[in-house]
Image (cartoon, rainbow, N blue to C red):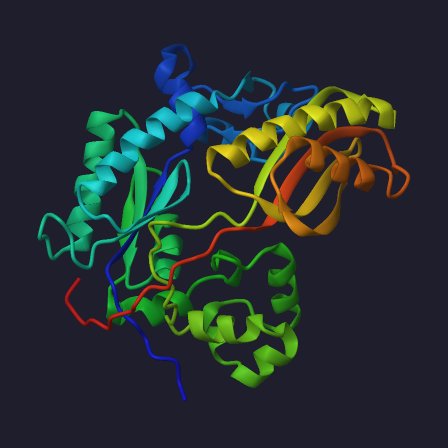
Length: 360
């Protein structure tokens, strides 16, 4: 039995180079210049890059050293998350003028279900245009948008005419749109999966569509059915306004690499305190503690332990992280430590799905 296609009017709004654009808006001297938001060129990692910097291959998660090599004129700015949250709230207020079905993915992007909307506007395309216009006029930043029948296609479409553009993929255009895409453009297909698909002769959506459900399940296990469906435009996940957090984390990059576990203990105490604050703010607790370690050579390691009870206390977080710290000897000196809590005491509410057909 084939999976039923559920049609909705979904908009994915994605701010253009959000952190960097906020910095350029607040400091006109930075406008038009290659900018990286993050640490320094010596110790830091790029959190976001302006479009001027991206032309030189500067990307998020790149080390400051590599970013500076790519772009010698690159300007580094420390992140100001309180300011980004302030701007994000203004943007979300605009979203809620159109629908209460808003699912934030981060500070700079969100899904909106405008199948039925507060403006009574039947055109999701015109709603997206109006939202982008208001963001520019009321906030001073540009946004891009993707509009389609489900979250998956809308997410891909929002990247199509960036920056400061939008793309609508109408119901009858969905399959052809997906067939013509390079497989690495499919949201959720990472670098490793893309390489595996290339090895199997899957380079485009059309190639993926030619493979049977059984073939994809054989090579990609449970994800096989997902790939089989999405290339056919089947993705029935609803917009969840009360999106439940799956983990809460806190981490810190150090000015100098740490070689002694004693010094690391001190840092873990501070990180545990910060994590406790975040957990208490949202009244969340969890069972699985994960210690994140980034070494001086930028390799990443995680160590986890699941407890038989829920915790949110900094003392218990620290003691568990400390135990994980001494679980095995460090490979190199350490540049970053982080603690996250998973298996949270949160429950996602189920949503009733209604099948609709309409003009876009």
